[in-house]
Amino acid sequence: MLDPLGTSGATEMLQKALDTLALRHRTLANNVANVNVAGFRRSDVDFAESLQAAVSARQGRGLTVTHPRHIKGARSSAGAAAVFQPEKPIPDGSASNVDIDEEMVALSENSLLYETYATLLSVKLATLRAAIRS
Image (cartoon, rainbow, N blue to C red; front, top):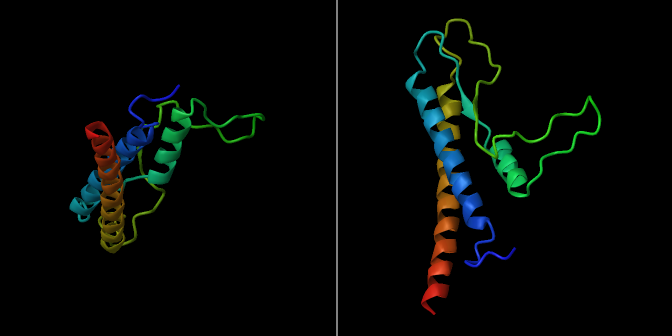
């Protein structure tokens, strides 16, 4: 069915991308805040996996499993982002498994992605506004 506003799901996908990036930013900031907490284990959000799950949910289908040893398809949470803890041991002499340099690089990358997707959404909405006015 044709979307009467001409968004064709792009606006929804950009919003989901921004939500996922915001969750990842909060998660990475939490890692930085707890870098010196004894026993703290870092968390992260897989942006690419979350976006792919959202796209699959948008298309109304996940991956097809045709053999018992196949990897399961997309999550049933309709593209919702999930926080996970990577398998990274706590180094000897460290309070946590958080590497502050890696976290700061990840935060910078995440900020740039967020800015890019926010700009794309802004352009999409500006185009829609211009179409409505004319």
